[in-house]
Image (cartoon, rainbow, N blue to C red; front, side, top):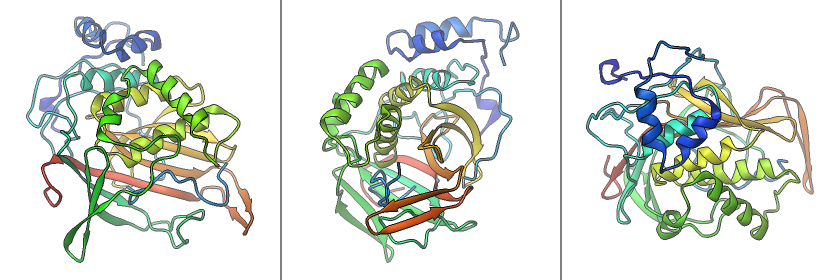
Amino acid sequence: MNDDRLVARLAPVSDAEAMTMVSDHAAWELAEQIMRTDPGAGRRPGLGWTRRPRILVPALTTVVAAAAAAAVVIAVTGQPGTAPGRTATPGPAAAAVTVNTPMQLAANATTLASRSTGPGPSQWVYLQAVSTISHSPQGGIMAQVPGTRQASESWTQAGGQQSATLQDGKVVVTGVLGTPAGWPAISYAYLNSLPTDPASLMRVIRHNLQTLPSPFAQGDAGPQVFDAVAGLIENNPELSPRLSAALYGVLAQLPSVHLGHARDLAGQPVLSLYQTEEGYLQREIFVNPVTYAYAGQLETAIRAHTVSGLDGSVSIRAGEILADDAVVTTRIVDRPGER
């Protein structure tokens, strides 16, 4: 990050004010109010035997390392890793608020998204990622091998109708199979029809969960909502910044979701939205603290657990990593193979 491109404008902002910022109509009005504030005044500091079918494209994600970051500054830069829809040239810094809660993260993301656009229908999103490796067969609980790393490159066409990967040095385009649990068939038109107001989007997600039941559904709606949001974000890098911000706003409405600071598998500082599921599994979505784009995911067993199924059972040790992916670079391109 180039510090000379960032202008910190910090002010104490409550969750109620942050919720107002998440509204598209009020984002810039409150942002301007924050920028007029003296920065120094009053500153506040289930898994079944078969793994949930969330990641339907090659996995993108770290052992959680606590970071002491107390504030995050929004900026628009032309650095490597510019997220889909972000301006590729430097612009004036937008307002930033201290990020201590999921709602404040969503507020910052909404502020930045208000001057960003997503890819066009004929464009592609290039993604470079690093992930750990599992020796378990696909479809089961895939414990990751500590210390392993593998890099990957992929291209996703807007709307998720096609994807491309490198095979023997050649770009191979294929169709996308399946959709994330809790969602109907994903298309460019469908993604652009989704509301960008978090409250309205929450209603859509809950309706989907009721009308598109999943065999992995749990009694508590909170984990299902988190899984639906994670599935959409992780499998669709072409999401517009406004929709991504609204999805963070959906998670911020869940009492079970908390904010964390970490370093991902690539060593990058990230913000984390996380919750505990079924008493033993901590699931995290990573967010880039500059662009507020999706930055990866982590699943960690925080307690020992045994999962039973029709074909046997498997024991999971406390501290075992089940998924760990980090997004290194994302860019909007015009065709697969471009970087």
